[in-house]
Length: 139
Image (cartoon, rainbow, N blue to C red; front, side, top):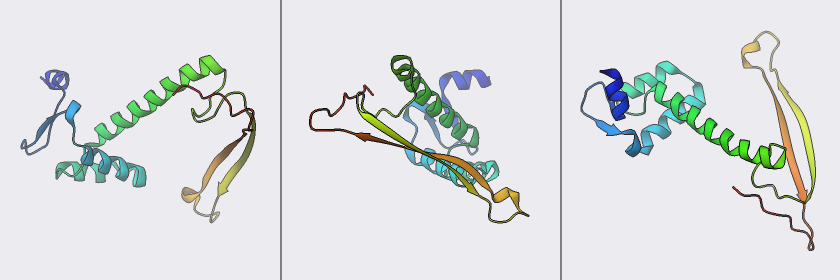
C-alpha cells in the first residue's frame, strides 16, 4: 500500500486534510523546511513544523537536497568531461585566470570543540581584455 502511494506521488498531512502531487508542490513549505534545515539541522523541529502543516517533512527536505546536489553534480560532470576541470559555469574559456586559496579556521575556545569550524575559501579572478573577452561556457 505504501509503495502505491509513493508511486502516485501523493503527500498527505497527518490530519489527512491536505493532499497534493509532488509535481505541483507548494513552494512555501519547501522553502521553510529548507531554511530551517540549513539554519539548525534539527529533524525534531522540522517534523514538528510538518505536523502542523508549516513545512514539508524532514525526509522530503533531505530528498530535495539530494536531488539538487545530484543535479549540480550531473551538470558539472559534463563540464568536467569537456574541460578536464571542475569550475563554475560563469568562468569563461581562454582567459588568464588567477586563483586565491586560503584555509579558514575558527575555534573560539579550546574547551568547546563543537563550535569550531574549518573550511577552505577559493576565489577565481579572470582577466579579460579588449581583444579577448573569452569564450562563454555552455550552462
